Length: 101
Image 1 (tube, rainbow, N blue to C red):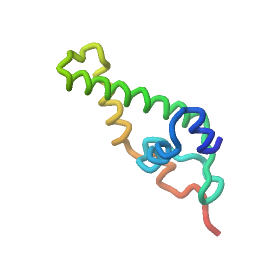
Image 2 (tube, one colour):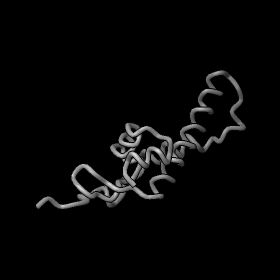
Image 3 (tube, rainbow, N blue to C red):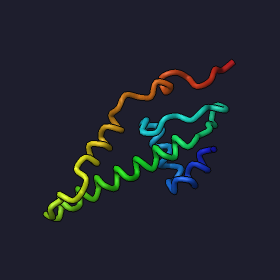
């Protein structure tokens, strides 16, 4: 699927998906041309995971800001988001996906 289809499948704006790709939160798709890539179900699942972890971390922060106990909110969510963002880049992201001839 193309990025527009990934956007439709996840409900995430294309600009956000491109941000996730730049920040390596989302692994690159299979390059088909210099400016085109194809994405699969693993990308859909990754975007859904990031959305859930981000939502949980935000709910926890909001509860703490209001002075409410956050014991019912997943305390590992914020750590999960931090781990995704700071993780080693995907090995395939280190090498070019295609060669220019």
